[in-house]
Length: 167
Ligand code: ACO
Ligand code: ZN
Image (cartoon, rainbow, N blue to C red):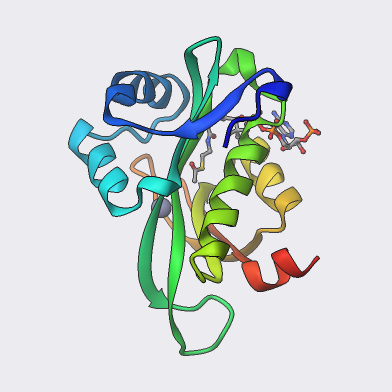
């Protein structure tokens, strides 16, 4: 998973990274979690928790959980799905394609694990993130009114990996 030619590397999270990941999460997002929440996600899906590093400094992370539930694409079908719980890149390292690469790695892992869909929630006001997800092929599938603590609505966005990897 090493991509040194881009000036950063991606590697799997390990519990020693917890402090850095919590720092990035608190710096970048209002949705903050307890240390045990991060570790639970890691235990649920170690391959779906990836960090980006530049010169030994963690500058971003993605964490994904595996879930079982109704498909967003096939009516009334129960499927395994990837749920991108959180992604963030420190402000000075944005617009370098790091988030795109982190998500692509997670989607590849899901596809290799025969998991055909992935979803996430995002604030309806978070234009940078919505653009990023749309560019990758996620679509808005529904709105959850008042999803966030401050009352903001969420879009649920999802991607059908069968189509994504056929391209
Ligand atoms: N304005 C407009 N479009 C943007 C922006 C922006 N500020 N940021 C990214 N995009 C779009 C662009 O189309 C961009 O392509 P381009 O640079 O060629 O124009 C494309 O997304 C890919 O951008 P990346 O460089 O891969 O994204 P980056 O590494 O900068 O990370 C992220 C994007 C994660 C949204 C970052 O801005 C961030 O950490 N924001 C704060 C935290 C956050 O909002 N996280 C998502 C919350 S939802 C969730 O976690 C499930
Ligand atoms: Zn979520």
